[in-house]
Length: 196
Image (cartoon, rainbow, N blue to C red; front, side, top):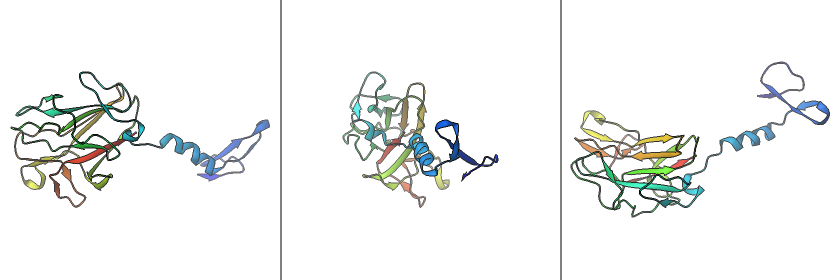
């Protein structure tokens, strides 16, 4: 956008000053104004994460964590409190066990997190603490022609303010958490955080 001293209809802007006069607009002021609309912060930095059970989270920082039951696509909150509590590293996501085996105690593979109404969340996945080691966690099946499945499903309901992140269980083959930037499968537990 160019600064203009006279209106021509092109991409330009003015400032309205006292008395109804106009003058050239300040790019720096305009940028500062619009940056305020688009600054996103990590949900773990907005409030101390607190696990709730039995009902949906409804305050910033509240979350529910679940374990997948054996040979099923159902989940339980029993023993689902994560051993590694959410922190500035994000939330730790455990690799969902083989379909016939349920998740281990205190190693959740599913989270529901309240981030607020009408947000535009950005999900980030990492292989290590400190938000390091990029991971592509988009769901994939039969990667490389083999029976290799993985990734995480993410969703957000703007009317409830709740995001859901989980490792979808596949009934056959090997399950992985994601892919590295080089395209290698990731078998270890990973971390994620949400900017909103």
